[in-house]
Length: 116
Image 1 (cartoon, helix red, strand yellow):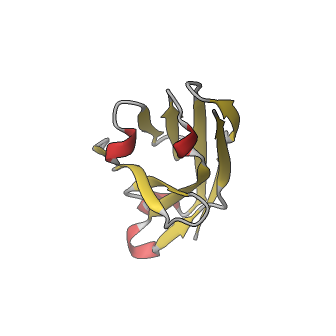
Image 2 (cartoon, rainbow, N blue to C red; image 1 turned 135 degrees about the horizontal axis):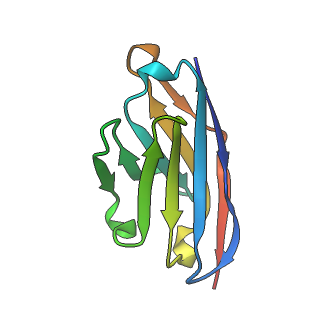
Image 3 (tube, one colour; image 1 turned 120 degrees about the vertical axis):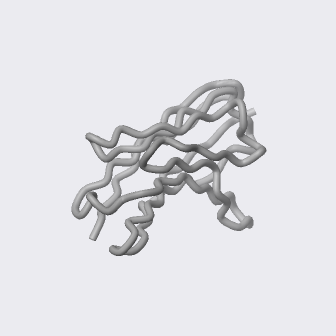
């Protein structure tokens, strides 16, 4: 099992920044991909950004150039630096990990609200 604890959400004005963190514990040796997803009210959950164990990244078109995903393998932690935030970035942000043979796991979610 892998446990995920997210932090860093909150309320920010448009144009501001937030940094999300997701710390994994438990059977972390199997973790490969670590992703951030988000879900806005009335919308489907969508992939925001992902990073592999070796540092390869991918981003949703809507956040390219504004968000940066990174990870610290020694701390089993993934980060999402969010800059130039827009009201449409308002959502619950979820951490997700692919722990290969151990399965996949979701965090509890953290609310990000961007006011105009």
